[in-house]
Length: 490
Image: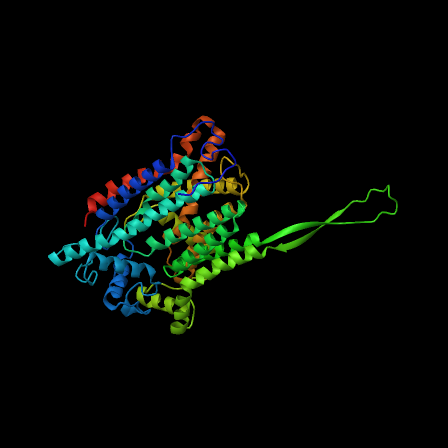
């Protein structure tokens, strides 16, 4: 894992006065063990097709397995046929590797009346249905591995920006133990891949900025090219990653434009007179940095360009927006565009985040007061973390490069934009769409929790980073014992 460079002061001890017992190896071991323990528990206790749209996502995979091609957008091709194909192609390959034959999801699992905290399907299995459920659980394991990537990329990004070891570890733990993230990374859904791809793209951007600060232009270009390739992979996984891609690609060009001051010389009538000089601001373009940004864009298009061209040829638009929206209206019935306005931004969007940020599955949810309290605390910690990263940049918190903070907050904003666009185009919203910025959100919130505690009472400062992981583990235990064990298994 990458670690931040320093000038002689270890970033893990700066501002603390004593060494932390944590090391990179210990942190990685804690993250891997914690995440896998919870993720495997969630996936084993979540019954087949009960997670978010899992049957429709599995249907896409089975189309690829059967036809060795990707479907056209249409009701006959399944509920997720408007999605880009990368995740489904990878899962289809995983299925082939496991030797699982193609199957038709949910053909005989009868629907049953649903209510609060009840299953959607009957799960009265025949022998063949039982085998299908086992096969589905095996397919989910690839999503679990992708989720582990998000956890490790978050930790690595925190170390690159200079966060102390406990804060970096707890940033990774935030992702590892967040119940809603565990749901997404333990079932068959393309959210399981787009989230780690965006986290990896953010990590590569942070590495590029570190290389620039260290005077290694070649390394910066390599990192930005890698970022573009990863963002391109995200574009052919799920379009919710496009706002994050746009923000990071724009930020890649920011160092290419700087201002230089040129003093203007004035001639005095008398040599003894004091002649003030004025400084004229000129914009200077760094062509090497421009080339770096172009490399990132080129990498993005090299991976995703074919998909946009295909959409243009088949549906008349690079994103196939009109065809997708029309298809969703006919497939889902209630999906429809929502006009811009105060109701969308200040009622629908906040309600979506309140209901679905911390935990959620069909007909399973946390008590509303819990959601409200967590949302309020999350907003406060987010604002505090943003202040630390943009205004109060210090060596004991993070390496003081402003683009680090802008990149983190930009990814969070990209996730928010993805949710707004999703609601705007379909009237359907879920906070999981915003998890393309989950790594950045975790780092910002953990920093925003730790800093106020440190300022209020230095004695309690070591407790600060662990506050959110502790709360989220409590939520995990509630979900496991309240929902998954009573309902769960296969």
